[in-house]
Length: 186
Image (cartoon, rainbow, N blue to C red; front, side, top):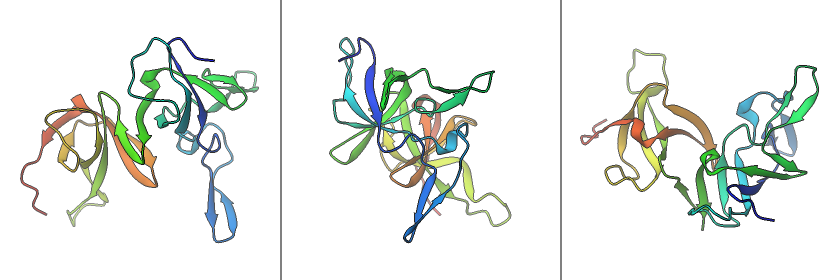
């Protein structure tokens, strides 16, 4: 079965990433279904759309929006699946709900997005552990001016946190990048 304009996917693992292995024990970090921080954002592409021209292929690992696998409660308190739910273990998503894909162990950001690694703050007089609105580009779309490992600045409130391969990164729209720092002292 193929979707006309949407991808058919399944979670890469469970719906939620709320467990952590410590030694031979498993620790449950969260039991509530409404926290987006614990929703799994990695998926495997089962089928690509029929009419959409996309870089993503069947079998790719993708990073999706946090509401794709999320469950929620309606006004009567009944637990429901997201609107992306198709049937047990299968979901449908549009391309605008996908931010990056992995093929041959390499992540690539989709058009209009980049993923930025925050940098540590070098200011001794602040309580912030990271330099605000700055970071190093890890994954980027085919933008001509910005490249991987560039130090950039971006607009306030344009970043959204993701965990990709165990590393915390910010997803930033490429048009929200305000500066590419040429001098990279410190």
